[in-house]
Amino acid sequence: MTIISSIKHLHGNIENVLCLPRLLSISSTREKNTAGKYRTTTGRKQMLTYEMAHRPHHIGVKKSWLTWHSQNLEEFRQRQPVVIAQDEIIRRFVRGFFPDYIAIDGSELIIKRQGNCVRVAGFFHYRNRLNIREIYWMFGFTEEFLSTLLKQPVKLEIQFVADEKDLAYNFI
Image 1 (spheres, rainbow, N blue to C red):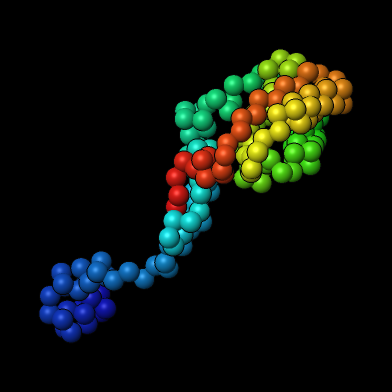
Image 2 (cartoon, rainbow, N blue to C red; image 1 turned 30 degrees about the horizontal axis):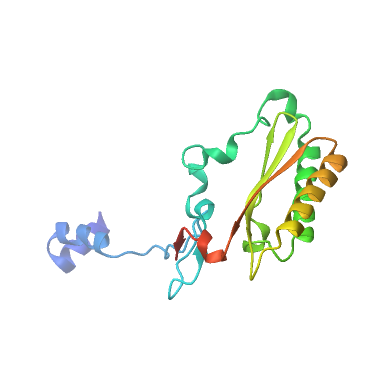
């Protein structure tokens, strides 16, 4: 009671004093890191692909084609550690066997499992001229080697682009 009476004495009207804290903000600044959101750069230099441009909560809606595989069935969940190891083997082999053709540091390789078949999809880029015989041989060797190693059929679904900037969905 004494505090309110002293405030009334100083300022005269209690309503003006009670509205004063609403005008001042004493909280800390909001510098939050958000998952799945890329920060803008000066001059819009950073390239975003289609998968990078959409946030993680859109996986079931806008990025659903990445989830069309059979690994969410109950009997496949028991093999999850083996599947993770196989995915890493596939990614490392493709990055190592096609070092000149990998676009965007190999992060855009998509590994889909449909039943017993493993499909590896992604984009490669070529610099000057594409040697078709060499590419067909490398694709065939990769499919045969990974099929023998993993003991299940492996199919490569790779498309070639002239430049990595052709894969850009947006620049931020």
